[in-house]
Length: 160
Image (cartoon, rainbow, N blue to C red; front, side, top):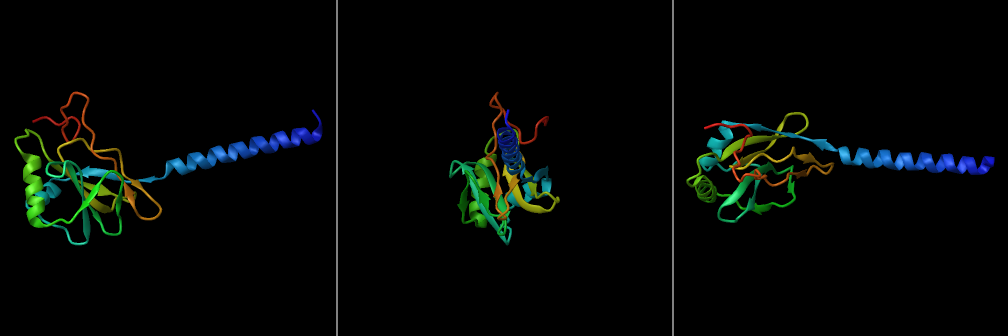
């Protein structure tokens, strides 16, 4: 193979490797975590609207699958609707979510990659995968997942 052609082949391979590494680095991103917290459950059930937080729901507008409150500097992206939270609305939604269910809803803290609380979660369904922390300060959080058998406690392995 001529020297010039070999040089171009090496360059093309190096460029392809660089593109692949950039794509992998872009997919990695930063992620937070979620931690079960009875205090958050009590806050929702007492209809406490947290100052400095924006509220979001997913699922039905009258019986949501989850309610999330995020700090105003950490807007939530994805399949969530922002709501104008009031104590009366939170009480109505929490009461509807509790209904006659034998499990939950439960509360969880939404934490950033340093373990700092950036939001709260209230749902009777399983926690989603960890929240993705975007460079612009926004957070992507999947809606809650239902179990294949239809039974879906908020925390895997919970026994009542």
